[in-house]
Amino acid sequence: MQKFIFVFAALFLLGNSGYAQKLFTRDAKIKFSSDTPMEKIEGLNKSGTCVLDAATGKMEWKVLIKGFLFEKALMQEHFNENYLESSTFPNAQFKGQITNLSEINFSQDGKYTAKAGGKLTIHGVERDVNVEGTVKVSKGSVEVLSNFVVKPEDYKITIPSLVKDNIAKEIKVVVSAVLQPLKS
Amino acid sequence: MKSKRLLYILLAVVVIGGAVGYTLWNKPHQDIGAAKADIAIDAVALYNEYNTDENAANAKYLDKVVAITGKVKEAAKDGDGAVKVSLEAGSDMGVVACELSPFASHARTDFQAGEQVTFKGKCTGLNLDVIFVECVEAKK
Image (cartoon, rainbow over all chains, first blue to last red; front, side, top):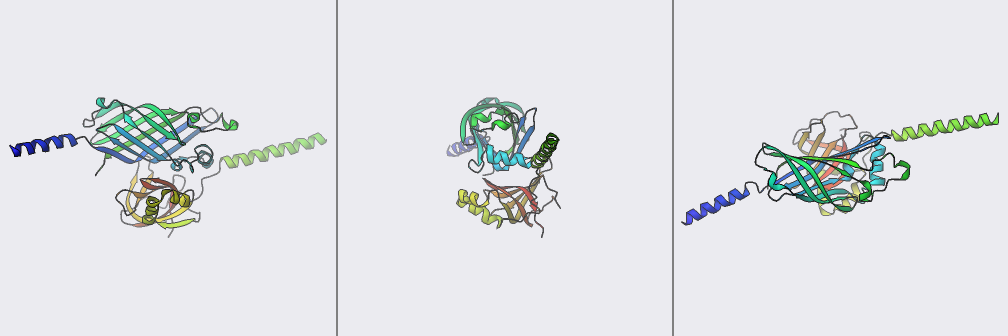
């Protein structure tokens, strides 16, 4: 009987840990673009971190502002010094939750629509956001992708009136990450 | 006659102003390969400094050209051909990650695990790893 209970308990624990796992990457890509008739500005960061708990849907993204690269050096300089003030606010992050977790099966290959809600912090300003994206499960890796829009004024990013026509009112952001199970 | 001279001066101002503006606008990224490093440090020591006092380390290293020396843990190429070299930091938790510069040409982009290398690059801070961008391998 005791043996039976032990086996049962072991199976129960194993079953639970099956997808009680954390997924992680340190190579998340964060890209944003500002498109106006005057000019197109793009910044790209390839060293974001993303951790997703597949069991609870909890998710965190973090990226260093100084790691965004621009084609033009001057844009990179203005982005850091004047707009994002990266020496004062060195990173941006999202802390939240997948809100439709029941619709995503992390143990079955496929492409799922995902919804997430949480707090996005940029330039020291924290705001509640809701975004949509996709979760693609294939052979043990999980790819998360989302497109959303950020308004500079929502995050107290002031654009001087001289260049206000050069910078979009709505900045398009694309985040993507290929996550691997976290070895603990 | 006087107004003609004024016109020439005005024209010169516009041309010079435009040229200066255009040059500034197209200012190239800093040539890290040719730049002299502000600070030289070992990857393990740098990682320790960051994990002891992040703010102090940021004050010391951000926006500087840093020569960083360490042992290659792994080197990875992404879908765009961008290379990221991870240097051992004496910890299981993180590495010193060096993104090769997309703005510079590189003598080589293949690095083997275990070899000792020195990169010059710009420190962007701590996000689990200490991350460097715009890296160029330093000439020996």
